[in-house]
Length: 415
Ligand code: PLP
Image: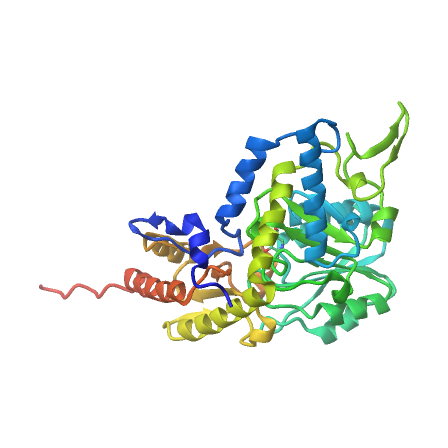
């Protein structure tokens, strides 16, 4: 159960927008931050701001200890075997780019194939396009059906001995579809390929166990799970990280530097060149403590119920097309829709006047929208602090949108 007073933990939700209470329905873009996370950031800068892995004075040691403790916390959160399997990055985007660059450049050769899906965020598409162009490799795409569910029979047909990697999102940021990771990973491994999962939309919203999922890489972002922006991670099995060359070169990732050559530290430090994002990585641990205090299973259950409520309430809005599956076992708290004839930007602008924040556009998933046959959609997305009252406000807001954009009656002639 989500505590009844959970919204009190989020100072931003007390604000008014255009004189109306802020209804924040854009948590898939970034989550709001609880007070304890905001305070932990201030505490870092006020009490122990120092560079990590360098100084031997007290506050530098404290910063280093907390930075490494946060790595251990992220590792435990996703059930990694050891903290060294977690490399801090700036975001999911950087995490995937790290794999495409460091792993991809030595493991992908001309004629190799990388299997993706048609529902990927650009973060899990463009890095592979760049790699494929450089290596003359081929990208193949698993299609999804009219319910927004991946067509696994097609997936099996795409796999071959040329497949080196299968990379897909755990939960779609547009359709909400939760993909069957275990089954997909088993099939990829049987074909001899590695598996990367984009966990940007799953890690914040459901229990995640990377060992149980049976994957090789898992990417996530702190800012979508009550943590600060600018912190993320790539998890990979230690042997894989150990065999990979570095991503960036620079300070702190080295063992010995000579003018003509360098030897590198072991993972994860080999992949963390330069001063990392110390404050935000440390404070990510506070966000995880907060989420675990509530419970990831409780968060998933809350969002499931809220999504069921939203699907039923929105179905009554005239002219609406809701994308994605109605099966709540395989759908997270993201509801994208189209309101006939009204551009999503217009929908979002009118909703903003009502104090309601939704996302309008392609949500960094242009091929997905093309596949749906629309250029853009409006998206409401939830988190632990979202309520049925938020959804009711959205439905009322959409009625205002329809009034604003309904065709005006023609003037009566002679009047
Ligand atoms: N993957 C998915 C499914 C996402 O929804 C997002 C962000 O919206 C990303 C990747 C990229 O995350 P970030 O912007 O934190 O790198």
